[in-house]
Length: 527
Ligand code: AMP
Ligand code: MG
Image 1 (cartoon, rainbow, N blue to C red):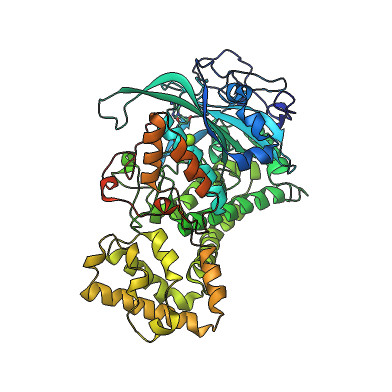
Image 2 (image 1 turned 180 degrees about the vertical axis):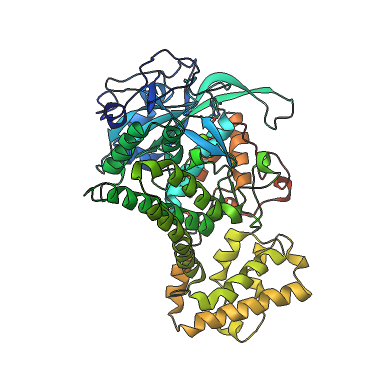
């Protein structure tokens, strides 16, 4: 199967590429990509692969266990039909235009068609220098690669739009990193993840051509993107179709932000070069999962100053990023007003998706503006004592609605979600109980079937998320060559909404040691 992979490289075949084929760091003009070759690694070994994704791509377990698989997805073996390239893009980083960025260490091997008929790009991350590597080395280390590998697949199983990850290999080469950027560089294990997505195009792919004032190539890229990634949009005349396209991006981005809010995900680096044009979660770097619910939290120590990309600000940042995209493409549309109108719809769309998500999380049919007090007080309750977001919502399904609505003691069913359960007494306990009482009355007002409510909640409130400290445990074991924890965890994460007997260690809230340990709740961009 692997030797006979059928490539259909639409991106390189359909769009203008860089005529320079020598691989050295430079500015690239008027090109969507540059041709590059992955670097040869010394001794690749397979750490893990995603069985469900391999199946979609038509790879059998024996394909994946073969040494050929490891060689291909380490970048050592080229298969006929591959046309490896690195994309050119720019981006706004932390609010400022940063100029050309591009795939500095990501190399797309080619595009294949999955058994589902969908096109997929196969992209190696950490496969060596490209023209876009700037001052960096083009490589990636095990800890960040493992985090990307696990979280991409976990997100998929959670039902959140995301790029995916097929494989995680160790290269056999070491890579020097200064984890906290504090003058302590040290060798780490080099690794490569093979990421998979219908497209890896980002907002920044369009922005770069605005910066170059090359609206002809931008138009080609827009047409290509609409044709292949938005096939349902009717192309009955420019600029209307372009406006519908932008509308669709606004819609998908709003949905993605509501989904991150639903599951408690903090991306960490929402620069416009890390925003997928098709509304996927992309570029897992210093991301994190909410432990104690806190809208101000970000795991990214590189963003500690202003916490621009904190949990509660992600929806607003996404809108700001959409504005940058609108600015970039406006000259091709020739009109600004319809773009402004689309941008103005963002907040309403986000609110709609947020309310739909919360209605599922709370087990009610729908939420309306009349429920805003209930939601506001819910956020207060979640922050009045450190409360594990994941467990709180999961346990909420167990609350006895009849007795809670009468104001009886109900904290017992959710007590384990608190990080300091014994401190939840007096005022704090009263406040939470009062909210539970209001919530229960609200549930009762719908006279829904209790089983319907519990099922609805359990399908929206995951029990297993890729908790930060679990990733660190998987990294610690994998660093020593033991992949059993990682593989068992990946297996559990395939069914995040279903209780799995014997797997309780994958749902426990953050232990105290992990609160301040680097790599758990504190990460930098070093990867
Ligand atoms: P990020 O915000 O981490 O997604 O990366 C921003 C830019 O830096 C992108 O153009 C990346 O390709 C590039 N980059 C990050 N790490 C490396 C690396 N180790 N080598 C080369 N380029 C990198
Ligand atoms: Mg990036």
